[in-house]
Image (cartoon, rainbow, N blue to C red; front, side, top):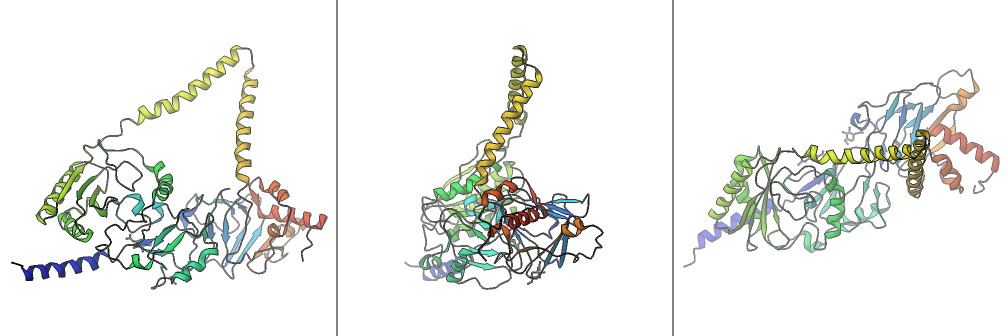
Length: 483
Ligand SMILES: *[C@@H]1O[C@H](CO)[C@@H](O)[C@H](O)[C@H]1NC(C)=O
Ligand SMILES: *[C@@H]1O[C@H](CO)[C@@H](O)[C@H](O)[C@H]1NC(C)=O
């Protein structure tokens, strides 16, 4: 006998479940690079008028000066790589009149990687790292049009279902997105690697797409890119028998219930939501298709791992799945919780050994009749040659940019008297520089003598110094004959 009504009931339920589930995740890009965000400054304060602003040498991202009409600083120490995004009609004045300006330091350093799970929200903490960055069935939300964006795209090609700005309702069309490939917001390492998912994949529900993984099948190098960022943050493993989870870069302290491949992701998801309903305060869970085609539910505690809650949740989940006639092949937890008592044991040798070794060396040298001064100056030389070695290595990354995105319209020119301060002294007038977001006139780009510029860019540099140096060069050598 065929029980028609029951099966129709089930079908309707399935369709509801699938449509709920395939309302895929939205993942938002999180980094905030605005000048006006207090947290972006070392001391937690936005720079005030006539402060001196210092960017780290390796800033490598764009900093957005928006929403400030008239910014006056006594100096800016530019990074050797990075961008300063000026407002379209804004004005930035530099005056080096103040002897002892208050210093504001930019607190962020380095690139912001697409492949960094910390730069995205919208996924459960139970999800493996690979699935916390956008998957091919996810919709990506980038910050609104008036915010500064600076993303280093992955090396390997990845797919997402759509991309929109947070102030827009509709995503970009695919060719609109591809037009962004030359924009400075996106740094690439040769290729524009974020693509829209192929149409036939985009419209497959997870039900039909039994082997649709987060990012295609050949993702080991992409996973490695993610893990290179994530692994140093793993920290102490606070469980006895950590699980190995696909796509996760650290040992996993939590639980897992696995089922066979005959089942739809949506059904397992619903059963899990029901079984774990009472635990939302304490645990997070994530349902995923594993690389062999099965479905698994991962559970993780929201605070530190205690073991007990996970044990209970995994047990509930297993019972619920079995009640729903879903065959559970494996249910496991990471065992008892572990206290971080080994910290001293680990740190002891790390701190101790080199110090002891250095002390022994010093004693040995002293014993053989070197004076302490000799030995120490030898050490300093070694250290500084190591540092020089590193520095020449880094130089190939290029030199300072001071640009107005999108067209690099920056003029560095003397505008005496505009600061509104009376000038009793010629030098003071000369020291006032105005950088207006207007015509293009950037001596860094006009010069062919890169090596000379590099020389002065070796040290942290203030714009005023740069300007006077460039003036001298342009005057004396008349090397610029392009215009
Ligand atoms: C992710 O971040 C965005 C912007 O910060 C926020 O509007 C959104 O609610 C967040 N989503 C989740 C699921 O936390
Ligand atoms: C950006 O635009 C949104 C609305 O379009 C507005 O609410 C917000 O204040 C703007 N932010 C800045 C920094 O201009």
